[in-house]
Image 1 (cartoon, rainbow, N blue to C red):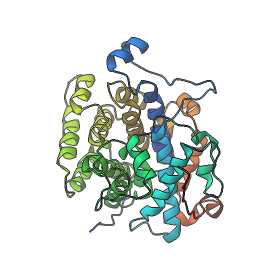
Image 2 (cartoon, rainbow, N blue to C red):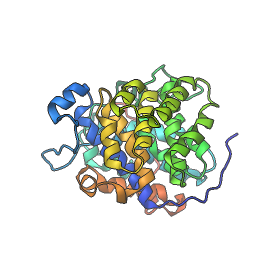
Image 3 (cartoon, rainbow, N blue to C red):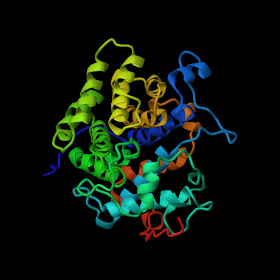
Image 4 (cartoon, rainbow, N blue to C red):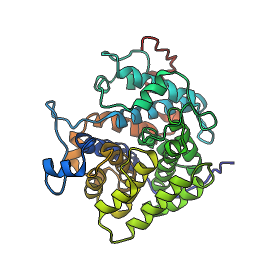
Length: 361
């Protein structure tokens, strides 16, 4: 049974914005080197690797499917909670899947969808930025998966990189946040190494928002993780990340020991290691999280979610906040997740009930 805990921690809209915009910054910083080896990264950007956002012809640093799907996760969760106005029980995962269907349409349709809510009408989201094959195939199949009824055996990081909104929305009940995040990931990723890391990220964010530091959040979340079947590989890497962060091992070697981040448990472990290693320095931590041979945008995005929630928007470099795509829209989503469901501004016009049946794909 999921307990309903009460917290007295201090949090504000700054932490919510930090979580979402921090994730977008990590995503954008890692995107140009996602498929590079560390040797190639250093060859192109110098021995310290990539240090700054790359700006496109429109003057913006590009986000990827990680941030796109994070926004649609928020969209689905908000639409679900507006139906029941109850943050003490599971949301309707069908609503989240409908929002993922809307995201899928952005990968194929050249024009914003009307009458599907404000997220679907953001033109800049209609950009293909290396979406994961598992997400594409699972959502195209139009049959939502779940922990109880997995639709595949995918352990990829495409589940964990998108679920930060679950931790923000269910911050008063971290164990419920874990389940919501895990079920969001299980819609497309059926292996425990694919969906349990999403639960870990969500519960950690809930704890961090409520005043726990990163190490405390890891320790508390591990207690929940160990209740789930198939947790052992995820638990092992999380505990290894904690141990490595307390050691003097060079960060590049430590990250290599944790993996490359293509698998969910490796991605969360790398991000957690970097957050534990540099809990008070967003820029240093996010650079650490992306400069490795692996899925740099996803590990950067997850680190950005965690440390952005911990430090808040004011401790993220202002230059980066201005440069990332959709910074204003991410700010609006942060406000909507921060507000009580009944107090979300213009909810009826911006989050309308949808019946998504995309048959043209």
